Length: 253
Image 1 (cartoon, rainbow, N blue to C red):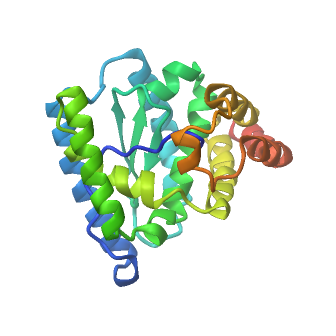
Image 2 (cartoon, one colour):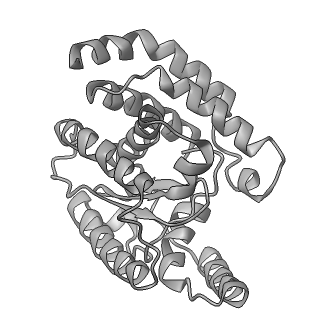
């Protein structure tokens, strides 16, 4: 998605992409997601009641039917979103439409509903275009790094985060997606939000907020996500597509 560190709160997907079709990838993702969310809930990490969580779920409810119509994979998705109590600027979607949204992304950037829809549409687009399926490919190096990370976090916080490290490895280390995947997700997500009745003019402005939040400091977040398009490039591309998106937005109204 952005220059945020894409931590993922779920278990590792035990799939090698070349050997798995869409249905099996989605099933494995759903199983891992369910287990991880259950453990997160037991640790009090799931937010279901805050104003932020309720807004995220309302946006999701409007986008979901549009995403279902746009699914061209041949396999229905069981779309689901969980809001995680975490101050990081994070959101992601797994194969098959299992999603996570971090409260910090909304609260720190003071996102309005149109901006939440920008992020969410982008993440839904990753799932619809099966970018995760293309990229699921664990290896020994990131597996070791993930385990080291879990031990380090536990030592500092006193909380065992191993249940959520697996897809941190997959969605934070083995990725980011390629620049072409990110650009495609930006573009498809823009049209999704417009069709759902969210104002696409908010999309370029989101990247202004992201630039202000990340500040070009060269920190760990940026080094991990250095293969993403720049915020400025993404903003310019979204502005280029606004006439098309605005036409869809007007039709939705």
